[in-house]
Amino acid sequence: SNVVDVTNYVRLELGQPLHAFDFEHIEGGNIVVRRARRGEPFQALDESEHVLADDMLVIVDAKKPIAIAGIMGGLRSGVTQSTTRIVLEVATFDAHSIRQTWRALNLQSDSQQLYEKGLSPELPAYGMARAVELLKEIASARVVSEMQDARSNTNRPSVFLLRPLRTNALIGVDIPVDIQRAMLERLGFAVEEGKNDTWQARVPFWRQHDIEADVDLIEEVARLYGYHNLPSVLPFGEIPHRDRDTLLDREEELKDALASTGWTEVYANSFVDPEDVKRAGMNVESALRVENPLVEDQALMRTSLISTMLRTIADNQHLQNALRLFELSRVYEPRAGDLPVERSMLLIALTDTEGGEDLFRAAKGILERLMNTFCVSPQLDRSNLPHWAHPGRGALIVADDEHVGTIAEVHPLLIRAFNLDVVPVFVELDLPILEPCLKSGATYHEPSAYPYVFRDVSLLSDEATDYEMIERTIQGASTLLRSVELFDLYRGSQIEAGKKSLAMHLAFGADDRTLTSDEVDTHMGAISLALQSLGVTARE
Image (cartoon, rainbow, N blue to C red; front, side, top):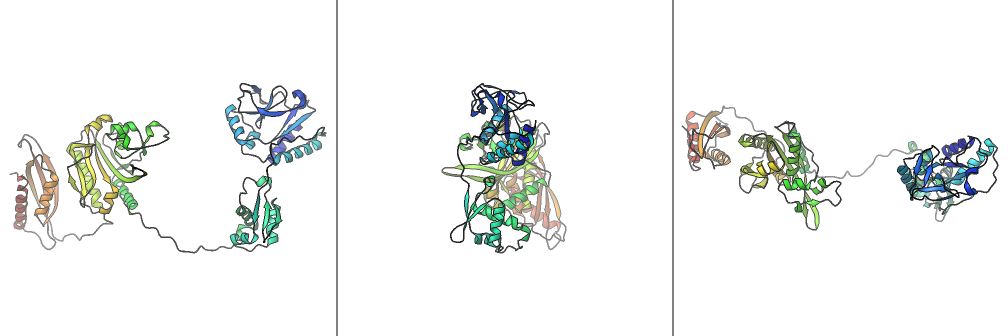
């Protein structure tokens, strides 16, 4: 139909949808816009059937809907080859209403796509005039009635105060005043001279959506003048100085050190399940609660990395028993009447099916290698372990007389609570406290030109005597001792009950000479004497 062709052409030409109704099928000869009635039936032009809701706009005749406003006309009133009289309808509708209706009905059209973006209320008059002009020219149509305008209000065009001198100052080029004015008028802006070298620029209706201030008008002048015609000027001024965030630098160095030795980094959610917090033995009430969590298992902000690491192990233990994981992230500690404190924590996790001393020593080795990277010699203190730590297989980590973390096997109660088939050992480090202890860069010490002298020693000690105390005593008893390495630990029927046997490699050396056997024997005697104060004796 040439009528349909005209409406489509005007829609493409002006961006204004139109709809033509067959006048013979309009009951009462009049149309109005109203809300649909709940359950009202409607058959669209594409022959689809719809049941309308009371929040949808419809165009109706005297009896029932003949179009869903802004989306699609009805089959009953559609234009056909036999149509001789039509009613042209051109309108604007609320974009939100159109979007809500087509989604509810799953009914889309070319008109709907334009209406839901929002159209100017000034555009329908242009669309109507253009359609009538084309129908007269192409279809020999005659206008038999006046145009009825049912607009609800008249939008006042935006008017902005513009100063040509400010335009030149912002652009950086002196553009003559008459050229500025001509540029704006070519774009449809009505420019009137005001007082004190100012203009009043009235925005055309088709630019109401993007012209919001006088600087937008200045941008239009610059665009027409040509950005390529603007001179290039290097920026000048002092570059602001920002102090380095040493904690952030240390975090990256710690991550690199762990990842480079084969450890897998974990990124867990900071929003945690209250049930996991309970399973980890922590107080749910002491954690920050999210006011509008997306799901209930993300209702709390974590105050520790322990619960999320245990959950990660539980979810991945079926893949392998020996997991080597670490996470460096923030925890959130609430403060009364103030914002929460964000603390950077590092948690290293090793797992095995049995746990025990071998796994603990492996974790201790990782800790020592990591701290040696930053020239830190950590000490272990077995007092006041946190709740998650096994009471007999853990210790606090001390550096520069500061408690910087904990190394421990996870408490059996937590292992059962998370249904773990493996035994984890955790190394937890509090980075804000640890960071001042870390040294920047490696320090080079020239190796001795003289060979070391090695001695092996087997010691017998009480089960309750800490290895850390034994090692510190040995180190303090000799100025020539360069290293101590524990290579065997024995408990069994070959020694007394309540005792343990430790075998160590000791390395002695000097920077200015090769040590004699007598010198080493003297220092070995001093070590034996110092160990006696701990009740530790050498095995024959």
